[in-house]
Image (cartoon, rainbow, N blue to C red; front, side):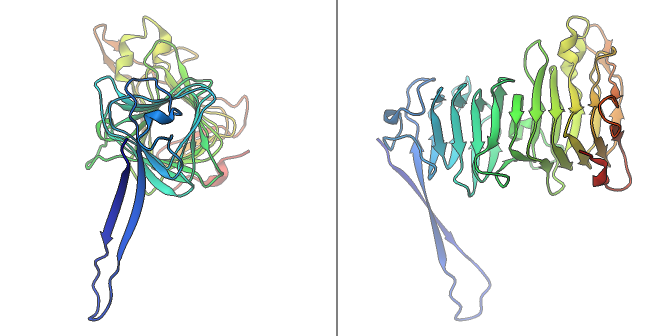
Length: 353
């Protein structure tokens, strides 16, 4: 068994007057390394960890051998932060099974990483965030079940999931960014500085719900809220900030004549939902028809100072032309509005209960 203790020594360098004392600060982390030999072995199996016990919320969980431990039904796993830095060719990381729960964080502020593009934190059960947890790297937080996949707070409203990019130029892309993707319920507060994607690589339309706590893109960061491959993003909370919005799946054009659902990616502002932002909006996918709308506002408002790109595009072997559409449904609320390209910030009073 291996005991990993990382000591970080930080020398504080400052301009100081003669005689001033500049102290050195130290910090310590305990790293618990996964030593399982096969995918699917239980996170709770103490014999699979270098410290002879599953990680606690004071320890870093390190997955560096290309395997995938499972947080199984009825198990609650913990770690202060999660680090996955090996790719076995099929993807490596952690899977939270239905009925399982993984709590990341100790109430403080830490950074987790999914370093390679094949690294995934797959959520079929529940991921809880305790404190402020920033995810970096090139991997994916994958939500795999519309009914059971859940990301929520462990303590309260101050818990925050931050999604960060490592791209050094604009536009950012997923090859150097963390992506939160799939279908399920994101109830925790989120600062999206990367990519949130309603997406499923299959035939049936799926639902990614943004609920409960507010979401944002802070500090003018470049970030994206995207629907593709039939994914629908339901907004049941307030979303603010500079994030861009896209329903522009280039692969969609070949599928409309075969199976309409493949192209029905939609952003839906539903009960309790409201968007007040500054990002651009791009609507290019869509098969047309009375029920196929790429932006649907049923309650409150979708408002941005960014520009709207709304156009039909063609491509694929059949040269199919997409037909994106916007639908303002005042059946449920007289406040339903959509506004783009405003010269000043969206008025917060536009969002009604």
